[in-house]
Image 1 (tube, rainbow, N blue to C red):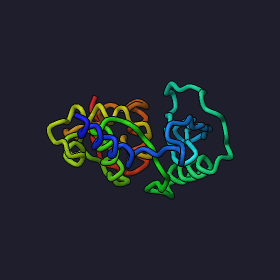
Image 2 (cartoon, one colour):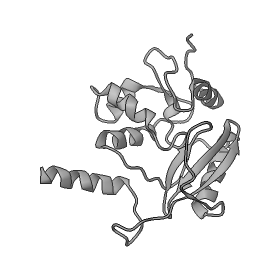
Image 3 (tube, rainbow, N blue to C red):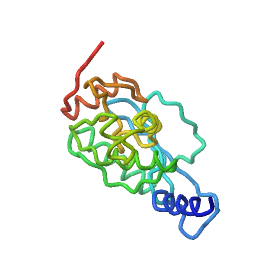
Image 4 (cartoon, one colour):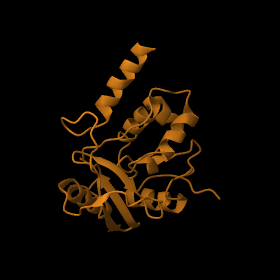
Length: 187
């Protein structure tokens, strides 16, 4: 059991960024909002990485310190503005997320789905290394802490229909249309 825990700890340490030199210390997180074509989104960062993106209408708390001039917030806002203007197809931001091994593998696989393309939940499960865990992968997609940055809106059902989205199906459709992605609208 200890060996397995040790392996998982190493896995997470590669995926999750902590404050340099502070093993168990509290790290301050910062946030700011951004008006976009889809509504106001909120960005949360640590000193070293982007932690969370809240979509319009998503419940979030202001337990973070507002700091609109934080270098990572400025950079994330610039890249998101470029994305919404159609000038950016991929993001180049340091990311930090924490979850189960399957969630982390799923979120990493999301980053590989290119602009304007879509994948099914089954294809994503295959890419995440768990081809028989389609429902678990779909659950991980629904818990994605970095929507748009890790493009969960590009994951659709096997029949080509949209499927669920944390921001709602109308928002998912709008994002896919902005990217020129092919999907089927079903009632």
